[in-house]
Length: 117
Image 1 (cartoon, rainbow, N blue to C red):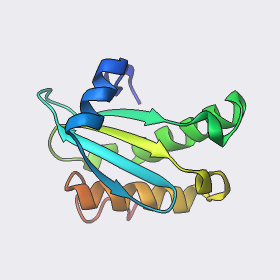
Image 2 (tube, helix red, strand yellow):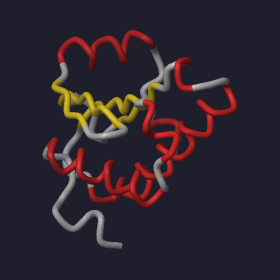
Image 3 (cartoon, rainbow, N blue to C red):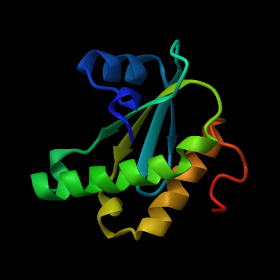
Image 4 (spheres, rainbow, N blue to C red):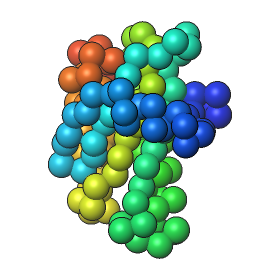
């Protein structure tokens, strides 16, 4: 995923948390708002409660890849933050990818056929 598609600043994350709507799954929480940009930007939040930096960065890499595979199916422009929950540590990548697709679909950002690749 290109860097321009990332939420980078704390201010951007806070704006999404404050004004956004949230959806939950077993391993993830998705918080989203409409964006003024012409493309969708993503942020990933992984708490220190999940483990040390090696574990957190691995979770973040897996999430980024799952989102990258769904990115071409996203319609509209949103600011989206994925928050990792503890069960994500034991999820397979396919289950994680299915949860990402489900959350994006429920948010209205992804089409119905995004997960069938």
